Image (cartoon, rainbow over all chains, first blue to last red; front, side, top):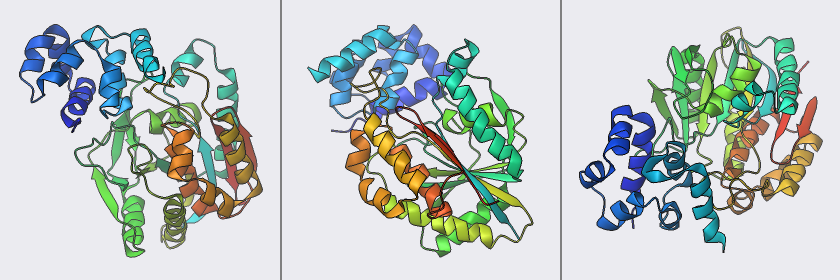
Length: 87
Length: 268
């Protein structure tokens, strides 16, 4: 299963400021327009970074979600969701 | 003819600039200063930097194993690092093209990078050691961070090829080489934010470097071992490439911390 589109979203959020603003301002609308699966859209919308990591998305790219505070994810909640995978 | 005058190894944590701004991480400041003293003493005309991009300069749509940065200038950081922005950082396109040409002749498949910016892994060391950005650089990227990564022996051989390419460069210049990266760290993954994953590996690698135990280090630095030390562990490959330039010469100075080290090798 390819995580390319998820990784591309994370990359664009850092390097493409209008895209970052769109994601922050209108996450549902922006996600709907991207070539993601429904499951990916759902996991992103709910900030399920641990699940996305398990699916193989690169952690450096996922970490931008926390750094940018996207989808309600904070550095603390990011860390918690990742740590939960160790249990 | 060009002359190799020194090589260095330092970490590049994106958090260093803001920590130092707050008056923290004074040990880091001192260690960068110690390396910078060696750098200043040898007066290099150019700095070749073996580095791992953190999926900023490159993306996974087109990911080379090795790539050489060519152009007049670069800028950055092109990531979210909290540090000053640097514009007009000088490159050395003639040397970069020569290194690429010589490397390809030697059988290394070196990609060409142009019109690019750089992330904290290039700029944090320069921020601390050469903040005037007065020394042109040649960013020489090694993919150590997006598996599968190249073998340590391959990266060492690349360093040897670069050593010969420097020797064959006709410009009368003093060349230094910098390895940017750490030995043990996790970023964005379940172990991140915890203690350094593998201080024992850091100590072992540093000891091998201090004693010039090249063969042993190359044997031990497998992808699995580096991964065990953290998902950033592949940055060791930058030091391995630098070691290919050095051979088994001992460092003039090397100091380890839990997950990283600072070192300098000189030829005077």
